[in-house]
Length: 434
Image (tube, rainbow, N blue to C red; front, side):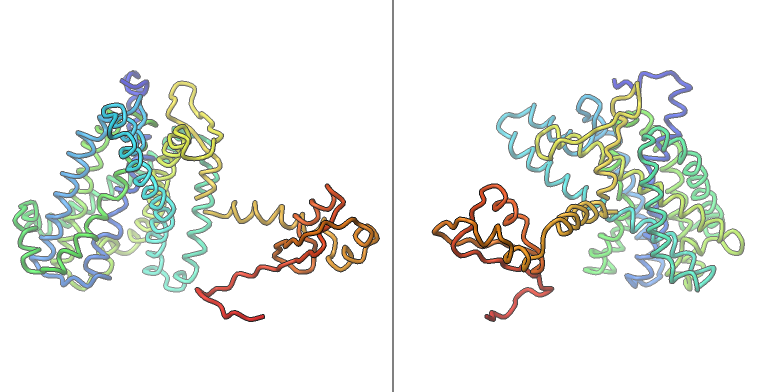
């Protein structure tokens, strides 16, 4: 039993709220775009068999993948309280000596996939919610990308406060979000109660029977409803197993199971809304409020993947598959609550560019001009070695740092010294020209 799970009942109640703000953000915001993609961008016809079949797939995906696989089996596979694919690979290595290399290799590959998800999910999630502004004021659609960037920068800026504090900050918002998901779903289910027939798994079979290969491709879109499941497992070390399981069973899962059929009911009663079935569930001033809280919810969805990556990178660093990281523990009682600044800022991906430019600009300012260097008395009178050398540079105007350091250290130049400027073209091949 982890330290998190041995806490008293009042603390556990706060943890339940915090898990909503960190763990379930990604899964909880999938209703914003999943049905819209299926019946909007993917062009799936709004017919009874398609709507009920898609809802049946969604229902059983959530039951089997999240409810059975992750909640019942995967969350039980913790490595001293830590979760994630690396923790799972470590457990496999302990059980089977023969499978050590293979288990760790699979863990690293799965980690790379999660990292890719972490780089993409925050931007896509926030962008999908802010695009709802175009339904209220079409002129705002042009500034959605800029607003998305500002929101994500603000999110990363508060990560240093710690997972628990961020969770407590976001928890009440996600509580309201899941209540809204359930409430709007109930409203439409009461209007079209026949949509609950989708709980019958035969509709999933009839969906594939009627759509063939198209239905199989649609399965990839349906998989969006369980995005964030791996981040859920990776966040195990932050909160423990029981708070995650209880939050899922008594709030998150019921809310999702009401909202998706609610969108299906809207599609069956108003087929003209295939492209915005989520935001089409409300109208008037309620639409503005829904867009606002949807934006906050997608910001919180990004939090789930960010905190999961903190745990992941700490584990792969401890296994010597990544350089040592400066890990800051943000809780005095829970070892799993950590903050890794380098990973946090590696996610908007600007720090690498900034970090490379700063020393490069300083080196260029300190380096003498190439013509002045060649004409200087020190170079003209320097001893020569009977060899040739080539120094690479990105600019032909300044002395390459490698040449400058070599000359200052040895006071010797090669008999023939070439400065080669390297230019990277935006093309797979370039013509060979002298």
